[in-house]
Length: 87
Image (cartoon, rainbow, N blue to C red; front, side, top):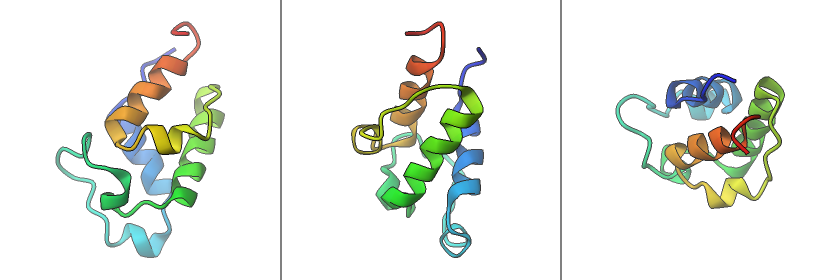
C-alpha cells in the first residue's frame, strides 16, 4: 500500500477541522514536529482524523494514538507502521 505522507495528513486535517478553527490554522511550512495542540487541533478533530484515515487507508488505529502521537510527524509514522504489509 502507498506510504502515508505528511501532505496526505495535512489534507485529512483540513477536512476534519472545524471550519472556524481551520480559518485560523496555518499548516504551511514544517509542521512535522509541532504538537497538535499548538496547531489548534483538539481531541475531537484528531479522533475524526483517525477515523478518516482508517476508512481511507484500511488500517486499524488505536484511539490512544491521539495521545501517543502528539505531532503530525509521529502520527504519519504510526499510520505507516499500521499499513498492511508493515505490521
